[in-house]
Length: 226
Image 1 (cartoon, rainbow, N blue to C red):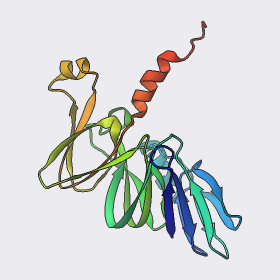
Image 2: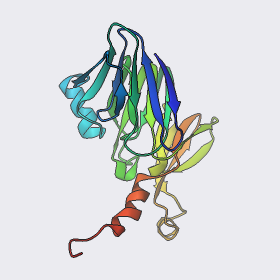
Image 3: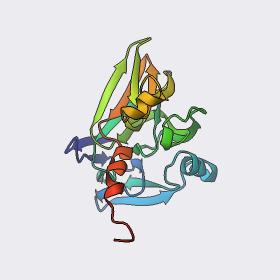
């Protein structure tokens, strides 16, 4: 599998070249275009229980799209629903946790399931469950806005607004707390919940927040009286 990411960071497009017989798994609705010799099949990956856990707990689609290049090399173009960036992580046995909606596509050798994020409610409004991706192969993650990588040294602490966390590597300690020194400070400053990570590890951060977009957009929508 070979790939290119074009038009970053605002309107990123993933172009994936598949060898004959090679397959790629992706979220439904991510397809932009594909070669005529590429077949597409919808499936409930991981069986009924696995698909249900990703859908009900992880916030992902029940079905996934499987692309296969038949007879010759094939091309698949993918893009996320919101304007933003795409980053490819080459996993070699590592484990990465994603927020709901961050998974775009991946090699069929990767396992994707929902895992309990703890009673702390890791992503606040994003729910208590995370997507756990493990195995070997390319993992395509997407963000709203550009993606910024932050590497943490052992013992280094770093605070990220929960609405801006996209993914993080396994093994880091984290706790969700108010962004300010207290509840009043968080409300007065306009900030909400934040996640404090402790290294070593890597956090992937998006430069825009879906929640902030909705907070700006909803008051401007016409009401029924209008």
